[in-house]
Every structure is written in C-alpha cells, then in structure tokens.
Amino acid sequence: MTVPVRPPRVSRRAVLKGGALTIAFASSSRCVDLFAQDGGSSPRILDPKEVDGFFAVNGDGTVTVFCGKVDLGQGLRIAIRQMAAEELGIGVEKIKYVEGDTALTPDQGRTSGSSGIQRGGVQIRQAATTARKALIELAAQRLGSKPEDLVAVDGQVQPKAGGAGISFATLIGERRFDLKIDPKAPLKDPSTYTIVGKPLPRPDVPAKCTGANIYVHDFTVPGMLHARVIRLPAIGGKLISVDESTAENLGAKVVRIKDFLAVVAPDEWMTVRAARALRAQWSEWSGLPEQDRLEATLRNAAEITDELLVNKGAPELPLPKGAKTIAASYFWPMQSHASLGPSCAVADVRADSATIWTASQGTHGNRRSFARFLGLPPEKVRLIYLEGAGCYGMNGHEDAAADAAIVSRAVGRPVRVQWSRQDEHGWDPKGPPQLLDISGAVADDRILA
Amino acid sequence: MDSYTVRINGFTRSVESSDPDKPLLYVLRGLGLTAAKFGCGLGQCGACTVLIEGRAARSCQTTIADVRDRAVTTLEGLGSSSSPHPVQAAFIKEQVPQCGYCTSGMIMSAVALLAQTAKPTEDEVRSALDGNLCRCSTHVRVVRAVMAASGAGG
Image (tube, rainbow over all chains, first blue to last red; front, side, top):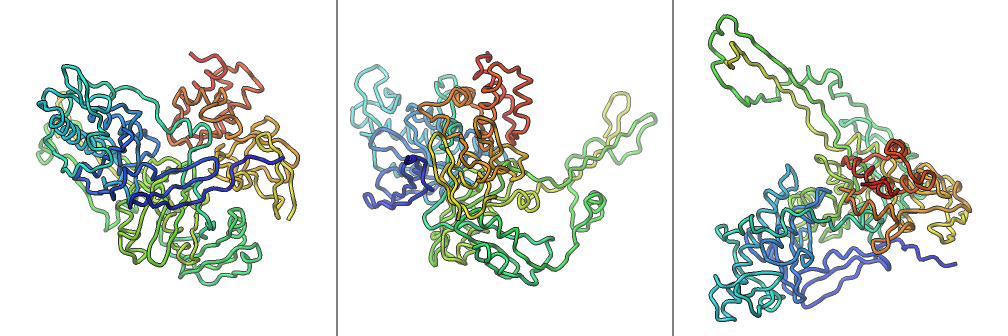
C-alpha cells in the first residue's frame, strides 16, 4: 500500500510576481506560506513611522498586518488582529498577518517585557486609525461627501446616513498609502468597540492541536543538514584535540573552528550518536563560583553595582525610642528559562547573503548582530521568525541560530541545529541572579523610614 | 541497513534504519510527522507521546525495532482541523495551547486514557497526564478539555 504520509518537508520555490519576490515554503500536503500575503506588488516599506510599514490593503478586500512583535504563545496573533480590525473598520477574519520577518515587517523592538500589546499593538493601532482617516478622505472625494458624514465599517467606507459605500480594496487595494503615521489621529471611543475586548479564538490553536503548526523545530529546507554542537565541560575551557574518526565512523562530518566543535550529518539521529561518540579533549577551567556560595560571592563582587530603589522618610536620623526596625534580604539565584523544547534554528549562509529561521524574540535587532557576526551587510541578512517552544525569558534560540549559521557557513549547506536538553539546561542564557536588601523602621504604626 | 514494517496512522510503511535503536521519535519526524516533539530525550516530559497499539508511549524511549509490525498513531493520525478527533476538538474549543509544544503529547495521553476509562474523574485525568509537562501552565485548561471530551465537562 502506498502511504500518504507527509514527505520530509519542505520544498522551496521562488516566484517573481509583479516585481515583488514572493517565496512560499510548501510541501505536498502542508504548507508554511510565509510570504503569500506580501501586500501586493509593491516592495515592502519597513519604516515604522509609515502606514505602509504595517498595512497593505489587498485587491481581494483583505488587509495584511505586518507585525514586528512576535507571538510566543501569548496570543498576539489574534490580539493585534483585533486592534487593527477595530481601528480600521473591517472584520477580524479579513486581516491577514505576517510577523517577525526582517524583510517584511517593521522593527518594533524585541518582544519582551510584556511590550507586545502596550507598545507594538499601540503602534499598529495608531497606524490603523491614520489609515482609516485616509480611507475616509479618499471615499469623501469619490462620493462628493464630507469626511465627517462617512464611516468605515466591514472593510468599506459608507455614508453614516446609509447608502452605497466604497470598499477599501477599490479605494487603495494593491497601492500604497504613502502616509506618515499621525500620532494625533483620533482613536475610536472604546465604548463603541465591537471587536476589541471580545475573547476571540486564537488562529494558531487548531493547527497546534492537529500537528499542522510548523515550529522552528519542524522546519526544513531542501539540502538541509543536521548538526549538534559539542559543548565544552566548562566555559573557560579550550579544545586541545579531537579524534574526528569517532564521529566519522558514524557517518558524520566534524566541524572545528577554534574551540567550536560540531558534528554534521544528513540524518538527525546520526548527529546525536556522533555527538555522543566524539572523543574530544578540553582543558580544565574552574573560574565560576560555587553554586552554594553564589550569594556571598555576589555581595563581595567588585563589579556588581548597587542600585538604590527607594529611600523614603528620614533614615539618617536617630530613631525615636520604641521604634522598631525590620530588615529582610531576598535572593534569586540564576535560573534557566527552561522552555519545554530545547532551542533550535535553521540557517542558510551563502557567500553573499544569509537567511536564518529562528524563534528569536528580536529578529530585527539580531539581523544587525548576525550581519556583524557573519561579515555581511545587514540588508543581505534576513531573519524569519518561526514559533519555538514557548518563551519565559530569553532562551537559547538566538544562540542556536548562531550555531546553525557557523556550521552552515562552514559546510556551504543549509543547517538545522537542535540543542539537546543538556545543552539547554547547561548553556541557555540564564535569568541573572538578584539580591535585594530592604530595611525600615516603624513606630506607633507609622512608617518612619 | 535493515527494513522495518510499521503501521503508522493506519498505513503500512517500510522504514530503513542502520540502527535498530533509532528512537521512534526521530523516525516519525524524519517521515515528516512532526507533531511529536523532542523535549528531553529522557522520557520525562511527555512531548513525544504517541500511541502504540492504542497505548500511550514515549517515542523518544521506543526504538524502531520495538515497533516492528506494530501500529503507531500520532497526532496527525487522529484528525485534522477540518475533521478533528473529539479530544482535538475539545482542546480547540477550550483554547488549550499557548505555545502548544506539549499539546501533541497531552492529546495522545488523553486519548489513551479515554480509551481505557471512558468517564474518568478529574483526579484520574490529572494522574494520567502527570507525566506530560507544560511550561506555559495550561494544565487547568488541559484537564477541562479532557473532561469535556469525556462528556463530563461543563
């Protein structure tokens, strides 16, 4: 019996359409169509001060939102759609969505510190209200009406008094706004909201419950090799020697660049076996403080700076008789952010360009880092966000992307690096340790200091 | 290179492997069945859970030799977005996943539970799924979805 199981994805095809590069990543049965909604035939505007940076009105009546913030599982994909749809005056189902692609979305800064909605969403909302104002003005000219007599509803501008309207697609479909975002463009009154504030289902959930969602861990490109990086036993260690035959006997190639050591093979399991088997000798290093002396080490460390957060009352005065002083110290050790899936990335580094698929919280910022790192101009480096295994603080996705880029450049092929559980626990960027001393004085139920 | 006949999602497949200890997880993902996820490689997180002859198993701890001539079911084999399995439908209705990396394993463990115990108590659900970790803390919604799938949800 022949079997309709998905073949190893993903084939890549590049289609030149109307002067714009549209690239789709497709397999026979499932598809990551990252760039299908590229907003028509114009090259992308990436300026976050321009309406065109965030919106493209498509000829079919849909609107594509280009969001520089990324959905790490927190629901931005529906929340941003709701904010955009509400402010534009169009149904949320008509909003298409592209996120975290340095070639397609404006730089809105890293997705961290709960800034997705309060900064990213607010930026897009202001772009949307500017766009709505422009659409109403365009319609007013066509209809011979006053803008204040028109309203944008369900993707068209229509007279408030009733009567025929003009669709967004007719007004500006496949064309640019060529308009700066107006920070003073008035926002809708929240009491009139019909979309924001409703708990709408998240669009990624069905695919996540049926195995169709393509995480960065699941993404492949033709000709891609798998790699594992062999970590040194301690951060200051140096690679003394490596017996490459121990990996080569298992069908893997060894990549050694100074103290960076990796194994590469066409099959992922081969790299796991080769990484385990590889015999390498590292120099010893023991410069880190002992874990159980971390707090004492921090208190004595010259390079640690004290920061006075609050100083109220009169702490310098002699305390009155009967005053009670209270002091407490709180200490957080270093902690792993420990995503359920260890970090992973795919990189395709060529002589003159690089494409990196990553679960990075900051594709735009990392484009500059990767350009420096690879010695390429930033405009030749493209980072494309694909969802990872959650994010609870900076995990190792960006480091895995660097691993993949190093190995891809060394072997001249696209490379996927999947960290092991040990890699993630041992080498992910940790939450830094923190030490907090608090003291105060009270007397007669009054806070003195 | 040995050949292994495995029934995957209802279809008989022939899988080549030079290593009889190659974990089923890598076999499945190599075939493009990527719903089962690598989390720990130690059988401790549940992200790689699949069904073998209807029973939940960690595919990272199961070798290709272990599943010779046996029936393996992955999340893809249960249903699709347009035609989901009742447990998938309940997870979608309850909007269970956040990042969703654990979801495949959660659903497979739940399906195995409901096959054994059609009307589990909430405690039985919690016990059956306690080997499936979720770092986004969706556990309460997971339990709610499994109870709903059993017909007991409110």
